[in-house]
Image (cartoon, rainbow over all chains, first blue to last red):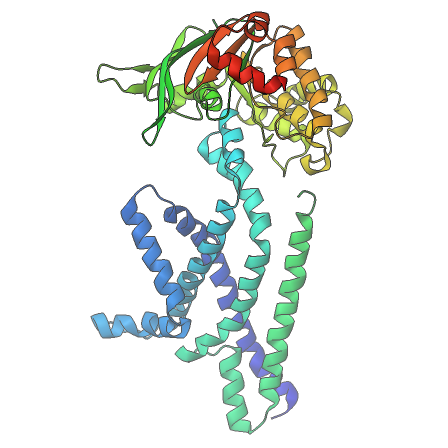
Length: 215
Length: 252
């Protein structure tokens, strides 16, 4: 198999990897905010459930969680999981990353001085306005470095979809490497991950810079 | 009367901070509140501006009741929507300024009038520039809070409160977070407002300022008003032993 054939075979996997990456972010970034806010709910049972959820998500391997999401419905309810593979991957990734993002958001929200809330309250802002206009913009600036970290980890974590035999770039690299007895597929996969993260770094540092106008 | 607070009671976890305090402020009056730390001065201001809820008593703004004690002896407030109406009456200047760091100076002054009171951008900006001019910092409109000195930031905070056109402005130790050389510029602005007959209540440790600017001085200690009256009487001829003791510390 020539280098170019390898590359074109693997490019389909790259697209699938990107799909996991993008859908996970689209799902977990907003979901994490909802989780973070529920984590501070007035109702103790809600707080308890959210705490337990975060604890389980962070305390068990993502690989194990993916297996549970995929095979769970079959073992528990005897469902046919034939077309469930990709949705299971996305559910697993989104719920896992939402937990991490929630904790990052919570840290950011808690670092905003109470004086900001009080100033807004005295000026007559509603609670919603206060959060959206005063608190959230400051939180986003504070959490950016941690979010970048998490996004970079996600690029690499997409390879865990290999556990469910999903044909993303890492799975393909392993298959082609075995069948062609070549090290080249791994090298291609490595370069792919590295370049993807290089792009992430550039984009995120731009975003951070765009918020440099205040301290 | 702009504000009337009657028989205000407030405890924090069993600790009585305000014990049956009553006080009112007339239009155009400048009242200074002095007293040792922990005497309840700040809490009184925070109750008046609805940052804290009272346990008992009555808060009346412009003849309208915002909170009162019901038959069971608990303080009840008007609905949150109605409370926003009462917030229009009062402004508060904090010790720590609490400007919004992500907004320019101009936006700090225009955002609430536009978002809360529904003013147009032109109206809000005209008022804001006018106020910044009065505060002597019109050239800082495009700057961000971190680029300003503490004294300038506090003047922005005063302007931000004034932009909402409150009936009464409360100051919670407005110069306590400032370097000594910067307190003058803030006090000058407050003095200027007093000359314009702005109704104000100032919690302060600046005794010469309190004496020179206010129409009335209130000395608080241990959650009660110990003594109040004309600044000359309270400062030069205090009647209560606790007032004398407190003022003696400042003379040294």
